[in-house]
Image 1 (tube, rainbow, N blue to C red):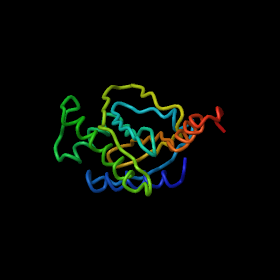
Image 2: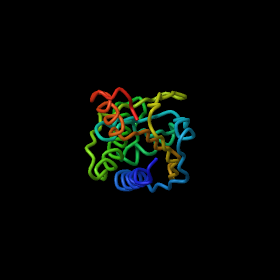
Image 3: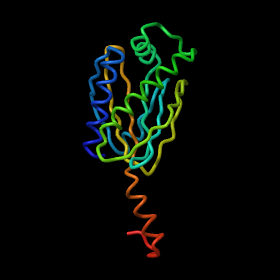
Image 4: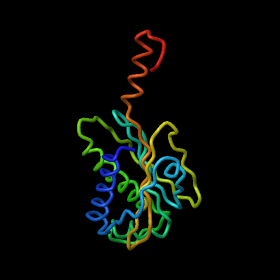
Length: 172
């Protein structure tokens, strides 16, 4: 994955958690390729889609205890995971991280979807197979979590479609 994307998501994650949840984040490791794509989230995952010049998904994955502590820091009150406010807070965090990174993707038109949140121990998220993957392993005083980014530049796909549509019949 392009170093620029890695830096955008590291900065976005650190800034959002610092400003919004009063939580300092240390990115302890960055996994790429198959190692990143195989990363498992624990009990809570916030997911957001990207479309436009950059296509894919961004996920924030937390163990339940970390998610509970982060949501409490973010909202200022203890919130039960069964409460809608809990999933709304996780959704807003993935929205802010994705939006912050998107805002710095100079020269690219990127849209983000509404977030989805999965709360279930041991769940599995199917990720796009035709994307580059990066997983930021993050450490905080509240616990560990991950930021998984699976994206691809849509220009390559658009070029291939245009090439075939122009009658050449082959994609180079």
